[in-house]
Length: 455
Image 1 (cartoon, rainbow, N blue to C red):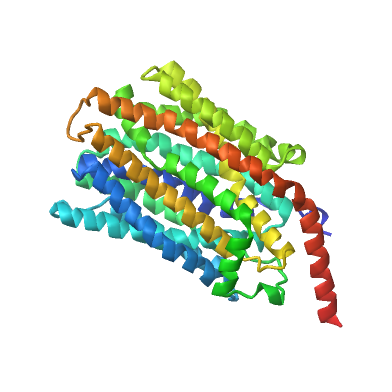
Image 2 (tube, one colour):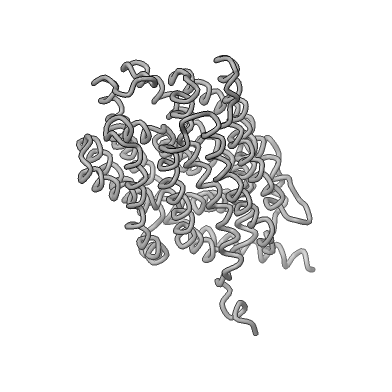
């Protein structure tokens, strides 16, 4: 008997790193898109408020594409599987990201706005939408429950390291390359090509080899989708928590903070490197999950995040205090970032328990839709605040009002936002406590149904 059969929870190095290859690629894409605002204001000369508005417009379009993507994937049945066929979108994500940061210099201001909007829609509203919607259906058909917990913890380490490498190197390269349109385009190509190749490894080496028995009640229809969303309160808690997180993390205020408050954008890369301090914590997540629920772990993390936000605001330009805040933020964000996919699966189990369609793809898409609203809201919020407080991208030194608003967006706003997430996760704990019983009943129903089919 093989070692894999002796230990059904063993993933294997090839399967593990291939799966995480796309996670790393997507995580790095999120990091790079966080620099879009400063590219638009400082390189293209666009208004920060208008940039925020056009990014928000793309999120409105996501209202259609996210829910549509979930519906499409829940109805997908191919020889390759349900979620796996959509992994090719990672190539198109990177192609359009490169084009997004390669706006032709001869364009008028209006054409620049259109270019940014169209390319951003391709990246976020179409290709990333399909990838994200396919994530949970793919994962649940490729890994068992214990393996998914390992991916959330140990896999999170590889994702964090990959994102950290980009977070550190990108600001450094900005200082030497991002001085012209050609420089920005060349810099993006340096990242886009290898990360696209790393991202496609999941499709090549990870098969959907676990059978998921679907009952007649799990047939997908538009009516079923709305019924599930109206009957499952927990997916709303998860989605809104993600919306708040993405509102904060996608404002892109960090670049402005280190450029104008600290005085050197390269320090941003050094602060990101501190993330290595929190990496060992990821090894303890599987053990912690035996003693604490997902909601409890996330709530604890968001309380730490709130404290980190307050410390960051009080730090001003003080590097030692910023280091303390960065470590607190790095520790606090881990549970919310890496346990959310497991929460979506809990919500699918809850649906099945209630006699509703599981709809993993739709639940993931709905979560992503609300999440992306947060991304757009963050861009709009930062753009409007900077505009109202007198920020001017062509000036090397900003006024006191603009500097204070940047500090507030970097510290006070996250503090309040993560307190809200803490409350949401306290409400989610009720489902956490029911999940073992729910999964046992669901499994019993599946075995009974399979036995009836064999008769």
